[in-house]
Image 1 (cartoon, rainbow, N blue to C red):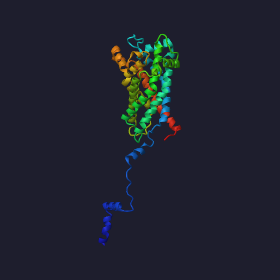
Image 2: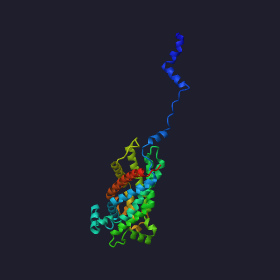
Image 3: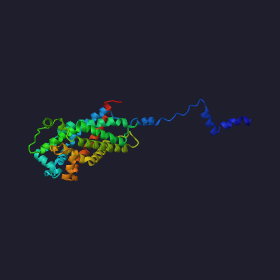
Image 4: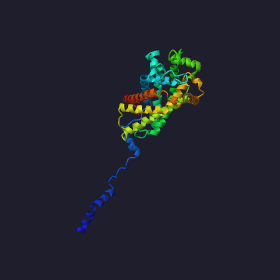
Amino acid sequence: MSSLLQPFSVLEGPCESRDVRLRCPHQQPPSPRLPQTRQLAAAAVGGRKIIHPGKAILAGGIAGGIEICITFPTEYVKTQLQLDERANPPRYRGIGDCVKLTVQDHGLRGLYRGLSSLLYGSIPKSAVRFGTFEILANPMRDATGRLDNTRSLLCGLGAGIAEAIVVVCPMETLKVKLIHDQCSLRPRYRGFFHGVSEIIREQGVRGTYQGLTATVLKQGSNQAIRFYVMNALRNWYKGDDPRREMHPIVTAMFGATAGAASVFGNTPLDVVKTRMQGLDAHRYKHTLDCAFQILKQEGPQAFYKGTVPRLGRVCLDVAIVFVIYEEVVKILNNVWKTQ
């Protein structure tokens, strides 16, 4: 009797019973683990979605137009200080003196001289910037929608170069000429359209592309630094949770930090670009000659003229643009359904 029960007692052992279950032909094999890419894709549900380039262009244009109307007086003061050469001698003793003399001579409206050229350009500039960035960045994102820092640097560089060639160089040239013209005893230009027509009549379309090399260097480095810092801070904030929302205040703080980094990183290029686009640009043979003459005649500190007003303007600029951009994209996602 015990010999008959022996096989059953063996099968009831823990190890043997486990083996029987595995060998049973009716037992379903364990399901294989999902490939890593599918796991990442599953994790991406509800995470940061890829932004459609059309939405990026529209949101960028809206953000750029609103931002420039808020921050232009700081851009005006920065440009005046950069054009104010020591050898002339300088007209302004500092930021406050520049504001005071401008208001005294031209009223409060004087601080907005040249706004039209920047406003007409800021909308397409931001549109090209964000549109190009998303076009370059979308194929580089991982399955969770995350863009690594090195790739964000390259995408920002591409966005800066595109906006420099398409929009920024002619826009900045016109802005600088209009502001510089106001400094003369007998201003020649009666407004934006009159100034544009006169510049093109005298110098051709090429006259609106002065300082192209300096502008490409400046804008390329500008956006490379800004998008790199912004993306690095965003990745740090979100951590392992791509679905974590960023409050507008957090976005503004990160944007201001990115703007400050770009100011300290490329103000020398901005000074050279401004001189190459001024009414006295004919004094310089090319971009390197302009930089050499500034260094020789005014010293290395001249490359950081206008840093303080530019710092205030750019930090506010980048903070506002990123906040408005992110919020407009959220609205567009609700009313404009894309894949």
